[in-house]
Length: 116
Image (cartoon, rainbow, N blue to C red; front, top):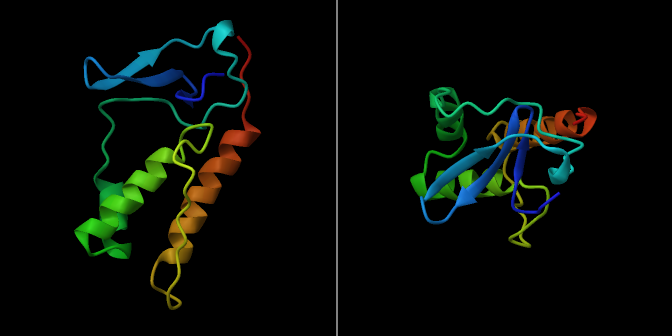
């Protein structure tokens, strides 16, 4: 599977540099996607809940932006940035909740498979 794809249950996303937007591609055998993320791609899906939870954990806009970037990169099949995000802080500050959300998404993705 190409490293620059985000594999979803109903297709794969790739960044179209010319259009400056995501391109949705059908799942085909040549993509060799065996373990897509456990979500369906929907460009019109609401995301307010996600942003609300991030604001609870990261009231600072710059911290929230960095977190969003790392969570976005985590959707790819390979660590293209060769970086990681280390969360620390006192109990109840939200770092554990964010880690659980990211981990649960990865586990769910690994447990799913699709045949084409």
